Image 1: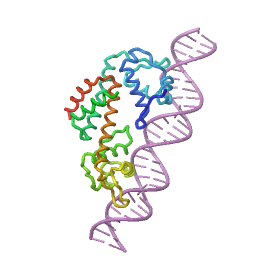
Image 2: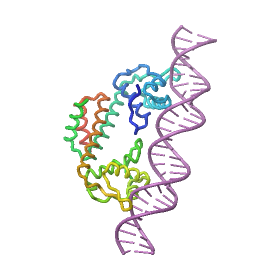
Image 3: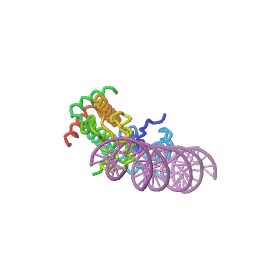
Image 4: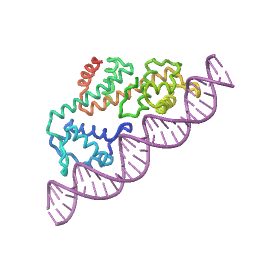
Length: 121
Length: 121
DNA sequence: ACTACTGTATTAAGCATCTAATACAGTAAT
DNA sequence: ATTACTGTATTAGATGCTTAATACAGTAGT
């Protein structure tokens, strides 16, 4: 079952974040072997090259370690995982606040709407 | 001074939203004449064709009325403007909640972080 | 040794976006 | 009428993203 993706954003950035979330949430634990590029690509329903691009970026960030011919595994640096989570949360939060302010929403209004939206899921 | 834009999203969608916000916020009032495509493009620092694409979409949405050879003006349908604002807020809100939940944030945590972030601007 | 799996690299094609440079028809003011 | 401004259309080129089809070198298990 292919992952549901947003057409307006590059696919590789979206699958990148999906895998980041799996690591952050502990679905992929520190030291765990990652599924192969081909496997992930197949699961996500994207081209292996696209998934490869995302995995290369994961390596650059440091969240995964690559063994050239023997797969990838999640970093054991739990502090890095934590800071990565914080970064993602902070980015989303800033983006959200900026846009809600641009739309002329007051803080209390936003919080009220947020409470409503949160229940519906 | 060119508008600050996000490289990961199509420019025409971003300038579209910028103009929507000007209408929603009342900076461009109902019935007002809009700056010309060339003028907006120059202000935003984008190609006139790109701005044209955004303006065409504004017309499709109904937020502006086009007089073929004599410029554009903001709709006088204030109800439409309001519903457009609601739509933008709702979309942002849903997107935000989905991502914060994916990142494993609880509702209270989100609200606390939101309060903090809000003050800093 | 053989097999099946790794990550990686390359080439080609299709597609959307963006920019640039023009051109045209109609409006408004002079 | 002339001038300066509208929105609109067209053509071309550059770039980035995505897919597809291969190929290669190294590892692990048998």
